Length: 211
Image (tube, rainbow, N blue to C red; front, side, top):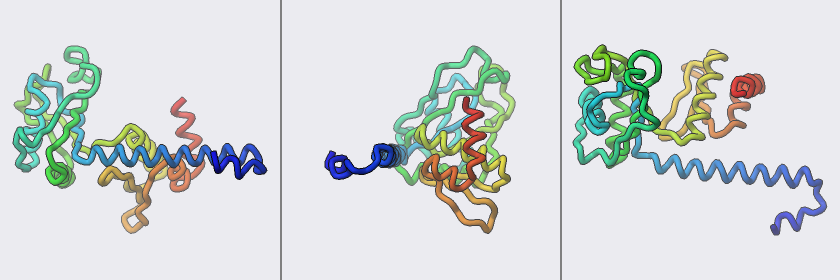
């Protein structure tokens, strides 16, 4: 209010622009704090729906990666979203629900992510109990991101693919992009950064595709 009182002589459009900038900055700061709260979390994607509970799946995945994890190390493990129709997740109708995992300590979470990056192509064991199939399939382990960061990451990957950028990745909840091996590492925090890094054409295409 003090700032508004001192800027009465400014054009109304400038005052509104300043307020919008302040709001966006506050949203960014809140999201960064929310991301820090997910510092012990990982997400397991594309692992088949099965009769075993989510914690057992986490222990199985840790064994595949060669990381020692006990039941006490898993604070929580749940599948997110509505259950798929019977058999739909295994016949191409619907993807399996992701498993969101909170671990007891950050070091354990980092160890699982490092092991997953080394292995790259992870496959479900052939004896896994899924609803309709026991064939090996790829699954993925990622950092858990806030909704805002997840959307930003997906848009950055789409832009990088269209513009032939080599790398878009996350590390400690932060999003980065690099055009090529020897290129500069660029941090992506907001929609404004997407425009700065990938150009106005990306924003137009992305907005059109989102409609």
